[in-house]
Image (cartoon, rainbow, N blue to C red):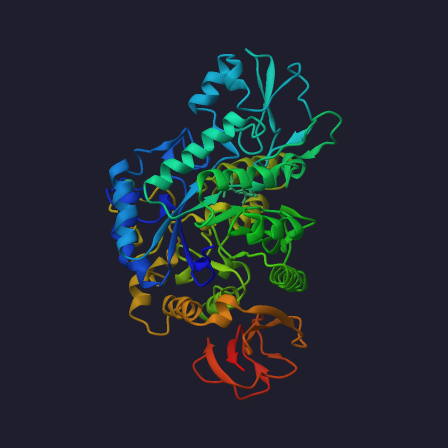
Length: 542
Ligand code: TEU
Ligand code: CA
């Protein structure tokens, strides 16, 4: 089995916000092509591009209407083929984003289902019921019911996300075969790997009768056939030796081991999001709370050590297109902006797993700081603004919550230069607002600063590709003697490194600083005191 992903780093592109090549304010495939040299300069081996297939774009492409054609807004099939081959020429493989839990309701399959064609109705999850009573009291991820009524059919269909994203019926072998066909299509075009959207939600409960009310996602997570469905998809399409990552937002540790242990022939790795919920009050994304660092450390310790022990493999990351920017969340946008961004990067990139860099993270890009509801474009943010204010939360407070939690924080344009529209587009304006700080936080200025966050990321990626302790070593968390300072040891063939990361904006005392050769640190002078400096990170070869 090919395990090159263990020493590789992946770069994630949110296409709509990466680079606009034709001046319409929207990022596109040719924009990515124009920046391939930049991506290569980071040292990454794979590029995951979020969906650019035909779509009504209600959920920005996660509502696919045709898996084998390109949304004209993003370019053409020949642009796409050129992207694959040009990236390949620079030593990078493309990973495409397969949204297989649901399709857009504009997909041909769903449109045929709506005509009452039984063959296509069986592609989705339709249930009988009168117009007033949905089959179960389930809520969808974006707020509101998870069931939508179709009066012509006198039936309800299930959608875990927006009503325009109808869930596919994976129990139907025809559906599974259609999806395999999509994989084969892109594989034949030279794609080197796949990211699978919300893959642990594909197997629904056998019977929907007598289910309690609550979040639909909760009832569909890691369902009874999920492992069989994944194995069948992977084996039948021959992608076992490619890099594959399943998005498994709130899976369990046991399932994650099973999804990724090579003997089970499922996936190379999984994303899980538990560590990104430590600032959700009572698990509620829309209730603010300062991050619980103890919970964060315990989660990493438990998952890292168990995955290591049972030969599972994780995708390790802080940021993606659904998350606020990590430097705004766990670091600092002020005096310690640079130190905290580098510390957070050190922590992730020294862990056991494959690190993902989300566009702009390597620059220390921050949250958007939008102040008006009109600034938001994401369907989830707009829905929750209505839900929160409907519950009596003041508009000011709702805007404050959304400013911290909106997915749009990760979706503002890539900051290339200090020039107009951050060098993202030649249009009068981009499709979504650009944070004012682009004048100082941008690729151009960080290229010319040897001490920049950007250049630090390059060092991290290089270290992983060269040092087997980092790519292949086991992991053990250590007690630093201070709950704001995380420490762990990576070991391989008798050698080890110690990683110390302070998540604190203050000086912090720890048990003892490790002795050895400093491989990397985010301060320019070596630490000779008993104390760690704010957000200090040190990597030592023992
Ligand atoms: O995300 C699914 C997911 O679990 C989330 O991150 C989700 O956006 C969040 O819980 C809402 O609060 C994936 C995609 O990454 C996301 O962009 C899509 O909207 C979603 O699936 C539906 O396809
Ligand atoms: Ca464009």
